[in-house]
Structures are given as C-alpha cells and as structure tokens.
View 1 (tube, one colour):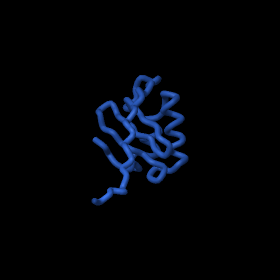
View 2: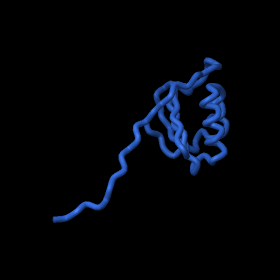
View 3: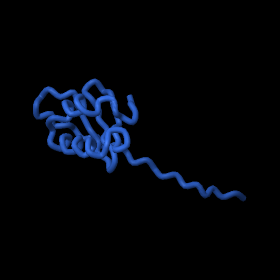
View 4: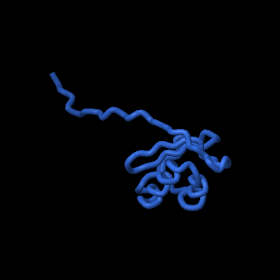
Length: 90
C-alpha cells in the first residue's frame, strides 16, 4: 500500500472587486489584491497579474493604493508597469 504524502494546497478563488473609476475614463474594470500581487481586469476583458518580483514592491503598493481609491490606476499602469506583468491570464 503506497501513501501519497504530497499534499496539494487548494487554490484560493479569485475575488475581483469592481474598480470605482471615479474619473469615468479608466480602462481598468476590476482588480484583485493579494499579499504580493495585483491582478487587473481591463474593460476589454484582458487580465494581467503584476507581482512584487516583476513590477517592484513599491509599484505594487502604489497600485493597491490607487485601486482602493478608485482613481489613477490605469494611468499609473501605463506610465510605470505596463509590460512588467508576470503573465497575461486572458
């Protein structure tokens, strides 16, 4: 009888919050904040994951601040971290 000692950690479900879009012009539709990353869903349904490792802890912290404020996130992404994502999900 063999025992499987390798335990799989269950995936945490994604919890996207609606971006407030206080300017009314943002390309950002939804976001998800995790300890070391921010996942962005744009209005065109593209989804990108930005992490401390790819975009820097300072940029991730600022992205979290802007996401919660509901203003400036899309502009910040375009200016600072546009191509510094871990991966494109869709």
